[in-house]
Amino acid sequence: MKPMPRGRHAAALALVPIVAAVATGRIADAQARLPELIVEAPESLRAVGDQVRRLETERLGAVMRLVGLSVPGDPIRVAVVPEESRLARDLPAWVAAFADPGNDLIVLFPARIGSYPHDSLEMVLHHEAAHILTARAAGGGRLPRWFDEGLASVAERTWGVGNRTRFLRATFFTGQLTVTEIEGLFAGDAASVARAYIISHAIVRDVIRRHGASVVPRILSSVAAGATFDSAFLDATGTTARQAARIFWRSAGGWEEWITFVASPFTLWTAITTLALAAIWRHRLRRAERRREWEMEEAIERELDAWDRDDPPARRLRSGPDA
Image (cartoon, rainbow, N blue to C red; front, top):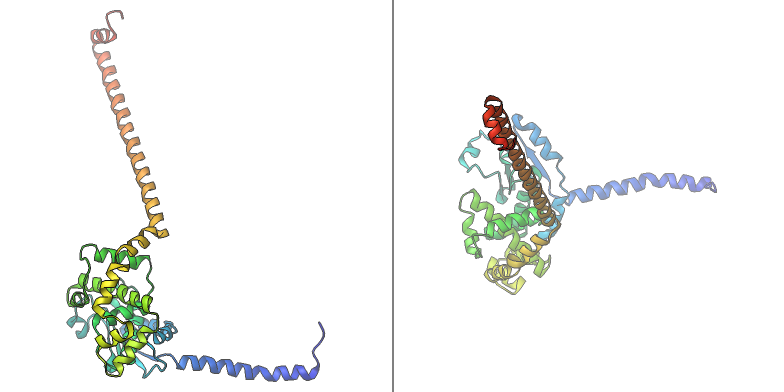
């Protein structure tokens, strides 16, 4: 390789700190465009607080794009609260976290995190942060619970096999619920709330799929401008929320979800594995049954042999008249 002239070498070395400064500036600028989280935790939950601080916040940038925010706004306080606190005792046991957008506050109860819809600490944090960012995009305007929770669920997790399974299980007996009925589920018990979460997630996901990613910012910006949610939804989609739910149930909420679920590799492999295990189980049952028959025959033979030894005339009778 031809050696670089001394002057060019010096110039290249001079550029290194400039490039590094530009890269550092870009990283700092990117971080500045993300919401700042201020984590507060008591000494007893210091390890959990440290874990929350280490969680990746880059995903919140995707949440901002989803809701149409270009500026993250004020820092968000994240309070990690122990189970023995009065606040935890005053809330139902299935409430693992909540967001208070008016006070830029997220409250986490880490002892309650671990099952749907609160699968992990990271998912819960992103879900609650999505509520605050959604409220900011809507200018604090009122949003129905099904849309708010559905949007936070879309922001927090993908629609995979696990969610399809939950959705099909949640709707197998309830049928096609209206948005008003879904809203009512949020006031029920833990099972009802879990059903409301997954159905809301599915409907909001379907609205975005049909009308494009820009539909959410259009709805929220209209609400921020003073429109009601119903009128904002109608302007952005050309249909009412009630009609959107009806369209969902006639398509993705019905046969499309079932076909997608049944045709998924996970379902097919699960069916194949189940059939294979059933065949193995039946084979083992037949082997066990034959073994019992053999053992019974051997026991009868032993009884007859013992009888022959104890009663020679009986042995001759058993052997036949020509023995």
